[in-house]
Image 1 (tube, rainbow over the protein chains, first blue to last red):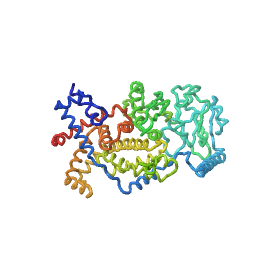
Image 2 (image 1 turned 180 degrees about the vertical axis):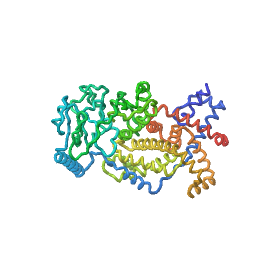
Image 3 (image 1 turned 60 degrees about the horizontal axis):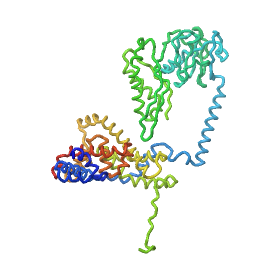
Image 4 (image 1 turned 60 degrees about the vertical axis):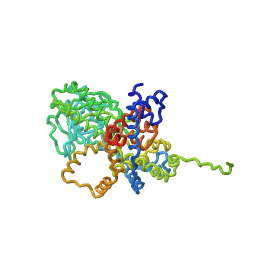
Length: 333
Length: 198
């Protein structure tokens, strides 16, 4: 009988999970090495089991309730909410919906929810009917503060013949990427999420058209100051990375995040050798997987932070240039 | 024994089920029942940092309070609490390691432990039993995290293998093997004490 095998089973024997057969027992009675091994493990267990438990503080219960109060979450499942509470929630929702509708109707004149795309140029005051007949590309904005990166991406285009100045600019979720071609008929913004050239360029309902730019001529509302629109605007391009499905690190449940249509946006002028992205495609993908998998579902949902982290890590990898933004559609299950 | 003398023990009602049925005060009983276990496990995992261990034990209870649909009875609550505690302790250890350099700097700059800590240290030196315990714990903490967990759960808190496998999210068969390796690892570290008494 091999001592090595018996010694590997000693722990289980002491835990009563296995029972030794007669030949093994005989071996144990005769083999000094195995006896010593058994005694040493036994003594180790004795030492560890002698470790005493600690007593929690006297006010532990109140500490727990303090901790519970800190986290503003429902104490019981939603279906246990009392009727009164439910009614209060419904009333709050109804009132907020009513306020939103009222706001939309009151400011109807300033609202330009959709701007259609046409082909012929015209110069006339800003209106939706005008927009129907010209190829429109949003290109600039009047703002006292420098526009955010997403706005820059949205507001620039190789076909900067005609543009709209809007305030405020659509949110990040509406980022559009402009193709490289200069052909006006095809060089319209592409929506990242669909990949299809939209027949209409959607704006946020609250976006107000402040200025229209057609062939470098500015037509604007009287109260606005003229802005120099002749300046060269940067051109942007994007690099597609495809879809990702990543397992998240949650406490006790299996969560996955789907990052769909992941694109890296970069400025053409500042990233001449953008083939580097193709060369480092696999490493970039690994970085994305690594970072996303290290977060919990709640952390991933904070997309701004996540994008910033991803961008910074990817830029550390790149030598020839930098990416400006990373875009994706997120689903957490 | 006559039938009259036979006392039928009342069925132990599951605290979790009672709490879920609306008896909110049962949560207090749950806390009281498991506070010692959780605080002690946390204390050993967090290298005997009493304050931090009580803190994460509180957080584990609060997490359970806010997620009552994740367990259905006392057994699953116990497993859930231990799992949460392990994850939290692991995270806290990572954070502590990250701040180790800062702490070292603090020590170099003349950081002095408060009187209570010094007092406890003096007591430890006096008590032989405690000193031995400290020695065992010092070495236990040098093991890999999973090895430390398996020894704490099995040898100190006597949890059955089934529960340990649930808490550690590992197959049942691997637990005895891991435990054996952990015990051997610890034994090799405390050889001088083990063999001195043999």
